[in-house]
Each structure stands twice: as C-alpha cells, then as structure tokens.
Amino acid sequence: MKFLRCEPKGEGRFLRRYDLHYEMADGHEKVYEMVSRRPVLAAEELSGAAPEGVVLVILNQSKTRVLLNREFRPAVNRVVYNFPAGMPEPGESLPAAAARELAEETGLTLSACLACYGCSYGAIGISNEVSAVFFGQADDTQPFGGEHAPAEEIEPVWVKRAEAARIARGGAVTGRVQMFLVMWAENGFMPEDAETGPKNI
Image 1 (cartoon, rainbow, N blue to C red):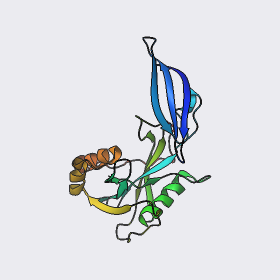
Image 2: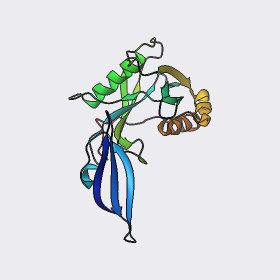
Image 3: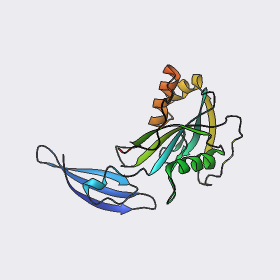
Image 4: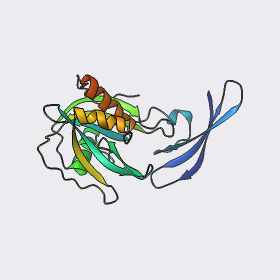
C-alpha cells in the first residue's frame, strides 16, 4: 500500500487519534484508524521510533518462578495477568526505567538484567507504540510493596511453571505473557545471551 496522508482526529491526555490514508494496489483508498503516544504527520514517523515503554520479564534466582502482575485493565473491564511495564521519564535510560517501574509496581529490586531482546510493537492493530523487552532477575523472598498510582489496581505474584500453563490457557492474559508462559511451561524457554541495549526495529 502507498501512504497518502495522516489526518489528526483528536487528542487525549495520553493518546492521539489519527486516520491513516493509503492507496491500495487496485487504486482504491483505505482509511485506517489508529492511536499513537507521539505526534504523527508523515509516513516515516509511524515506525522506527525510540522505545516509548519498557516491559519486564522477571525470574527468580533459580529461574523456577516468573513474576506477573494481576491488574485491572479498564479497556477490557477485568483483571488480567501482565508483565510489569511502564514508560521512561524524560531523560531516563531504559535500564533505569526498568528498575524504577519494577520497584514502583512490585517493591522488588532488579538484581540482574539477563537479556534485552530489543524493541517490539505491543498492539500493532491499533497503535504504533514501541517497547523494549528486558529479561531480568529479582529476589522472590523479598516482600512485595511498591508505590504505584492509586488509580492502578496491581497485585504482583510469583508463578511456577505448572501454574503458568494454566494461566496461559485461561484467556485473562496479554499476548506477550501468554506466549512466554506457553514457551516456558512446555519447553523451559529461557533467555540465553544478554544484550548491551535495545535494538532498533
């Protein structure tokens, strides 16, 4: 498809709404609705941006349990399992944001970064948001705490492989969580090589 133009349709507190106009192979025009955390005016601004978020896949030291958040998500009006995640503050590095978000949401300390698999899109059907995915470790004997916003309902839990399979089949999960839990529960998937930083898309 050939990009024609981007039409701003409205702006909220955190998201901007756009209609993207494309010309299809048959010459007809396609209008695609999307949202973005950043201003979009041209085709090159739709992709390839710096990460806007961090996602944390946290294991205990023995790699026998993974950390998940049970959190209420208003968009689906239910509690789902998700990884700790958030957005860097202005001027904050991605590793620093990862450690801060983990502490804020769970009260745990990021003790090691095992790997960074670079950037990925989280909701490509409706948004161009880009996140960096970190694999790390934390002490599962440390008590939970955290200072997340009052508007957030978050309960951190440590999950073993047997329970991971049940959660993955339950439906109340994000796509990233489901994929990891299935691979971990069935194949023992673990990150192998640490990267020095996030890769570009």
